[in-house]
Image 1: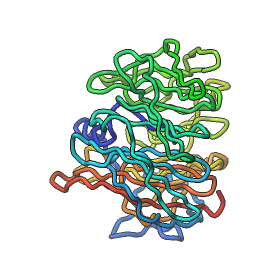
Image 2: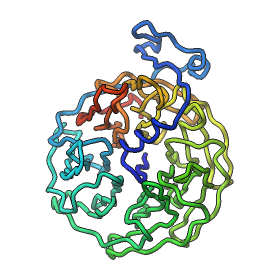
Image 3: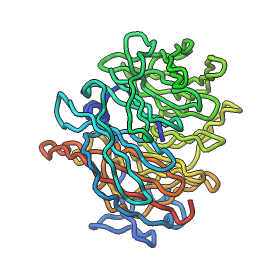
Image 4: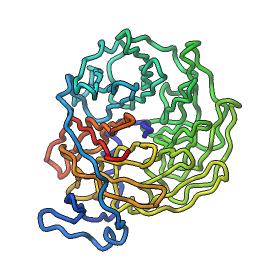
Length: 401
């Protein structure tokens, strides 16, 4: 979505949340091709039934990707180059997480290639990488690491240090068409409110003007084509923080109307920012129009999807992965069905079941024809079950994008 990205690793964020989040969750539901609830004796809960639309599941087909030449822990990042999906991640499940790996996937030939070895420092347990595509290079930005990869030459180059205070990575990172802009972030009791922008043509950084809001470790944000919109979230102490919009052309911020409920994933649909997965039960959804600085409520999600990947197809928001249960649940439910939201009809629909086990925090891209999901993990819930790390993926191609 887009949009990853966040001051501590995905696995550590979930472990932290497991200790504090106490929310009831709806039952998971599987769907047949006809859109009827199926499964091992489960029935559709009344809340799910009320939220479910009358539309049929999204027509389309999944196919499993060929095996990747890398293995990673949770928290892999990816970009779409127009021809291939570039994936970057860490390859060891325990500290010191010393092997950083990258690979490229070509959906036309269903083939992978291992990219040149990552030349930066070894992976860091605390922190999270972000990635953007400039049209020429994949820019990687994380704690202690700033690198650019050119797929045409299979070559990495190191970026200079950003002008940040007290940290060297950002909680949210976007590509504006000219610069990589990052803001916020933090870990272990810190939440920063400064940011920086990198120009790959000049190979230089500049410091962003001060934001009118407090710092956020893992802000929800997106790029509209004109502004970086940082939505209100929570700081390191769990207190609410307001939202703001940053214009890189003028280097100025403006406050925005507060999001009615803290949200989850956010995408830009060309007119509004769609924020889904918020509220106490993780199902609230809202749309924000930057032109009018107004929020409006849209149809609630059929079920919560904490830790899901989201992409915008040009017509629909597609979500896959995540858990439908509470993060404090005794058993974590990770369905392999996704969801689709159509802004024109204000309706949610189910996706066909994927040929993959459900998982948290997969990375995803939209190719213009298909959503590709890869990686992710399943934490050790219930206790003693053992954490499972995935290095597989699949592509969903809607019959009508």
